[in-house]
Image 1 (tube, one colour):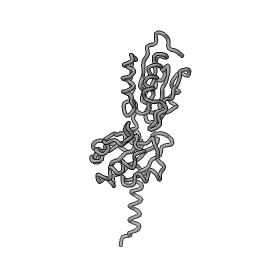
Image 2 (image 1 turned 120 degrees about the vertical axis):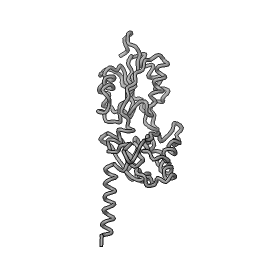
Image 3 (image 1 turned 45 degrees about the vertical axis):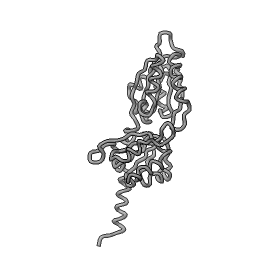
Image 4 (image 1 turned 90 degrees about the horizontal axis):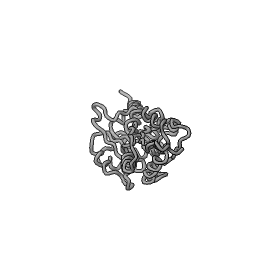
Length: 264
């Protein structure tokens, strides 16, 4: 439905959260309810589209790592053209629009074209997905800080920041890193982190979530054996050992040693 002449072109950049449709904010829901058109990413849960009025167009613009249905430049142009044609554009983006989501690029493009922009932050998979798996990114006595890094840069190379992070004692969270898992492992091993715990969480917060735990030295092998794929959050650091599966494996290993070497 074309916009009324009095409707001002505007854009709401809405964070959809990590996947579970109940993890969107109330403000995000209200934006969807007042949308005149919705442009949504592949990582945004389809169920969230039900909040939009039934008659409004819903446009899939893709955007998964390595599989972009629509180029970013075309998305920018589409936002502006839709705002002028329909009125209120809701740009529904997985996680938070400002964390590896190109939200700021879209905001600047829209503003330069005279479109009013409203930002609605979302719950990021960076912290939410580990938390839902009993992994705190910081914990007294284990980790005083954390790094958040993209595993793959826009040029398709491994981020140089991973090498810097591997030298710290902080928790390291890597997004979009599954295609570079071997390089990531080698980098951490190069700084003596072979035994550092790792947890990799695929489709975090969703019913089809998969989790694998390991140490740095066998993380790539674990990914292959468990069949883990993108989208996934990679957590490297001592806090990863707090995942229940990691704890269970450690307990079982200790029991095996005790049984193999009985006292007396």
